[in-house]
Image 1: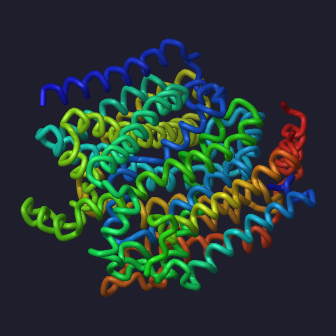
Image 2 (image 1 turned 180 degrees about the horizontal axis):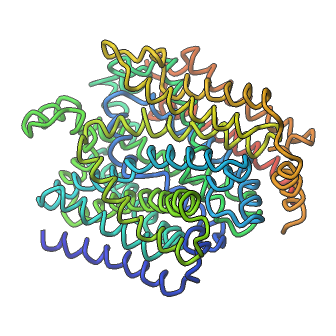
Image 3 (image 1 turned 135 degrees about the horizontal axis):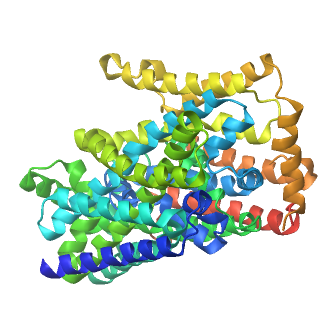
Length: 511
Length: 73
């Protein structure tokens, strides 16, 4: 245990050291702190975004779900790859050009100005914060469980360790160092995830992956196709899961990444990295882990017996199945390296979400509503100190009911992020989109989502027509946006020139 | 997106991407992922193969469009 704690201490000190170095070299301006001075190049951006979206869920929840339900859930990943690439191919250049030309520091600020509405800015800021802040707290708690399994110390120590790293990294380093540290964290995580898989296959599966598939074919063949052992992933659910993945372009912590780009050429090369290293390499590792390696080495019967022995549920043990196999099959020193990888995955995601939240709190809520005359230094100070408040708030929300938090991600956060997408896409691409349309659509979408999740007679989501929450709410949101925009006066010529014609001109001329 | 739609190549590209999405949804809904289970090379399950093909189609479309027709070169 002393070795484990020594390794984790050194790992933490490296991250804090990088954050302190970032603070030392930073320009101390709001633009530098919040957007890395808009100097992020394509390779850093790739690690920044890929590991902002690949949290410890890719080590616990994703393989765990595949282990129990078969391969159907992977369509969320395929949709997400297309969604992220689509953001950088089609919306990214305009978001970048628009915010760079006008010195906007937050995507919410850009939309507030585009629609000439402080009310919309506040509505968007509060709704995004409501959906993203609890998400931040889930990561340290996820690490806590792994920390406890490896060191024997209470899970809360793992959560506190991760939260302290997050606060130092974001408070001192700002967006530039968060992006740069994601390279280090990403390499640690990929090495741990892939290294453990290759080692396990070599040690425990002499027939390789075909041998694993053959073993599963004998014990639980339903795991190798949809709808899976429990019949969960029907064609309709898989199709819906794929569509939900496509909406990944609206995740605010990914949208803000596009604003940090150094130049427009980044948007030409970035999709190549997402397709090749994201879609065809990185995401396939946890898929193989959860759908082939884990069920071949630890069949469901063995996992069920383990859950009964430990007094936990099969679902919780399935989430930990990769870690359990690593601890059982590989040397102890490698276990701490894998935990380091999980912490890296958690920190790389939570730091970007925390950074995004602090930008919205400081720029859109405090400066946008209460202190419009604040100077650069004040805004940066609020952004830094809001980090501590957000971490405490998010951990408190997560601790209240950890069981409900897994559902919060898929049923609340992701549909919640989608509710600003009509205003975002329309604001960037449609001259006719109006302030009234954006406010009405966002409010209707968010209120419909919240009521649909709260009013569940007999456990049935009747208001949501028993569909995935994103489908009916986004459809209504989009219809309201289009209809109300067409029924209200078009934006002024000045706005149309500033947000469309000048952006077109800038993108054609800038190099 | 606006500037992409101004040119024929851009319209063709967007139509191609939309067709891959529709194709994927139709393949799923028509039961292409359901069942012996399909195993390419003895281990690649149908949802994995479908996803790899989908990503490769997007990769090819992107390479052709962005390196031949991208409006911001």
